[in-house]
Length: 86
Image (tube, rainbow, N blue to C red; front, top):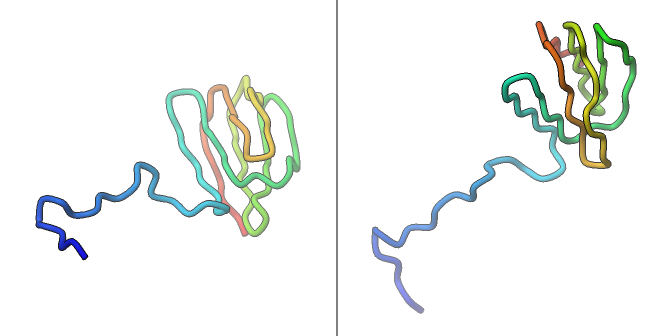
């Protein structure tokens, strides 16, 4: 069995999250929501999504869901606030 030298330590994976768990990533005017179970409410000013045990409410204007898959969705627009409830 080969021993690891200090320089050969195992590096953490690029994504440091657990698969199957909700994940949120915000960049500019977009917010990626992985782990989405359903859309509860949808309008230009408010989008409410369910992650199972948590609900996320996006408030703002010109809001829309740009892409929607089994894994998640991308909320796009002028997001003013995000509220997390359980």
